[in-house]
Length: 87
Image 1: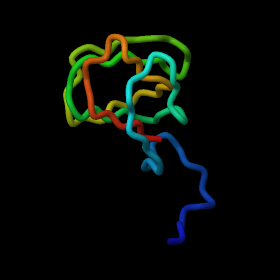
Image 2: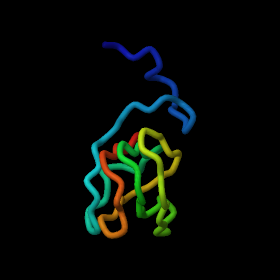
Image 3: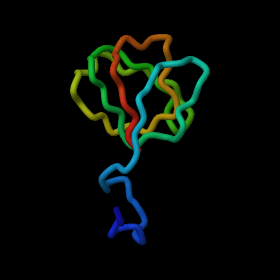
Image 4: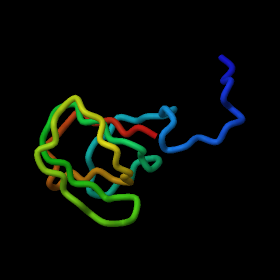
């Protein structure tokens, strides 16, 4: 299928065009930084942000897209599941 928008630069507010299922890991980075993180089953999520900081987001709700740019979802401290990185 031809993309009529292929000649336009994507912005952070444009619809996502890629995604990947996330398996939390303390060592493996995601294939690309996210524009948002979808949490399917709620809980805590510990991430490495695109800027390099490690943060824990507590009590995230399931079924929600969170507009955060992350490079890694750590297994340590993460209790949420069924996550998808949107880019």
